[in-house]
Image (cartoon, rainbow, N blue to C red):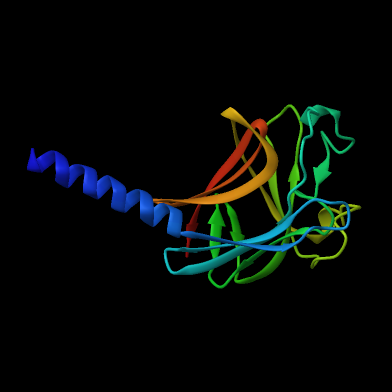
Length: 179
């Protein structure tokens, strides 16, 4: 019986650590009503923050948006930003410490994460590939429960972390390491 209690305690401590690993701050309602947040994590010694507007599907399908199949600001209103104080590696895409705009190439093919050197401003139009630090393919999946508000999160893993974008039933994710 004490083994079970110990196992349950370890699981609860792990779950609590995962919840505490992300700090999210509400920033503003946004100019078009989408809430804006800053989420922060510490992953393998790297301080990472993502700031973005959280649009709502409001019953619409992702494919109904005019940007579907194109480069998208990955949020509402201002461009989504990624700030890191350590180098991050998304496959072959190396992101040095700094602040960047994040875009995604959406569509029926696997999405691409786009790290752009143009600093935050209004998220459209996309500033162009000449401003990209680089791109990396994302893994596509499905959410069991649809997510109405766009959600960007980072999940700590034994081999680094996974950046994920959840909206509707769509999940786009990409593993990365620090260093």
